[in-house]
Image (cartoon, rainbow, N blue to C red; front, side, top):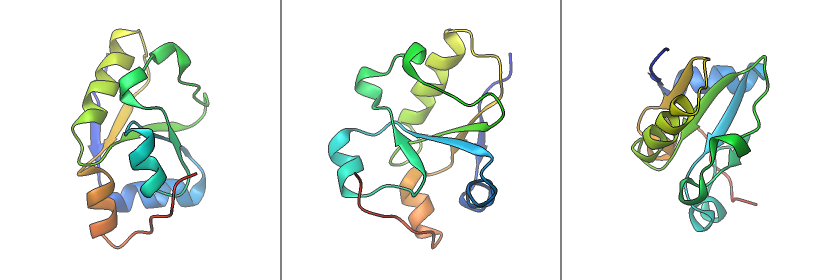
Amino acid sequence: MPSPEFIDAETLAEWLADGSVDLIDVREESEFAQARIPGSRLVPLSGFDPADVELSADKKVVFHCKSGVRCGHATDRMIDSGEQRQLYRLRDGIIGWHRSGHPIEPGA
C-alpha cells in the first residue's frame, strides 16, 4: 500500500488548473469560512470518516489543512480504511499555498 506523498503548491496549482484533482480540506468549518483554496471541499478532521469521503475514480486525491499536520491524520485514516490509490498531502497546507502566491478566497 503506498504511503502518502507530499506535493508542493506549484504541483497542486497545475493539477487544479487541469481538473485532475479532488482537493479535500480537513480544517474545521470556522477555518474554512475564513479562507479556502479555490476548488477545495471541506471534510473536517473532527468528524472525519473515510466512508463519507466521496472521491472521483479518475482524479488524484490531495488532502490539506492549515500547515500540513492534520492532513496526515486524514490520509492515515483513509489508508487504514483500505484506500488503495496514491494519496497526496499539500506541504505546508494553506499557509504554504498562500505564501507561494496562490489565491485564497472566502469560504462558503
